[in-house]
Image 1 (cartoon, helix red, strand yellow):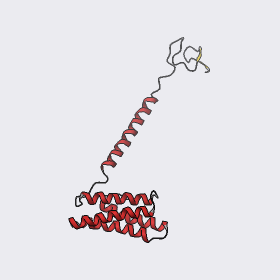
Image 2 (cartoon, helix red, strand yellow):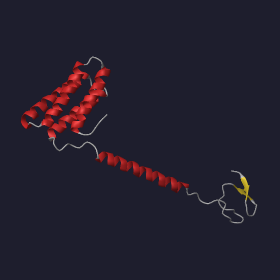
Image 3 (cartoon, helix red, strand yellow):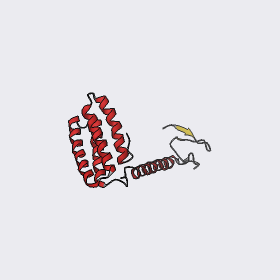
Length: 160
């Protein structure tokens, strides 16, 4: 806290004073910066909120030519494949789960004869086969990711 001279009456006053105690002149206006920062902050928050809402509403919807069971099995296969790629589950765990899904898709295709079900089954089988036949993780990961994206195009527009 320093002493300054009032520009009007030239008496010495504290530099923290907003009004001169002698002549009552306003030395500095109340700052409008906090209001501006608040407005900018709220604006950014609203933009981010709207962006998230738009993104959430625009992703992962079931295709009209696919039945619910095929869709759910395909989404499960994607989740398992993602867990394998992200090394959350082992190769044998992924293969076991994918084989179960393939079997379920097989049975579903026998009953509904839907070509989309057959296509999803082929994609899941392809992922499982690549996992099984590959000897190095790097090769497996990149190739499995490619096949995973093929399956994702069948299920919904979700690419890594």
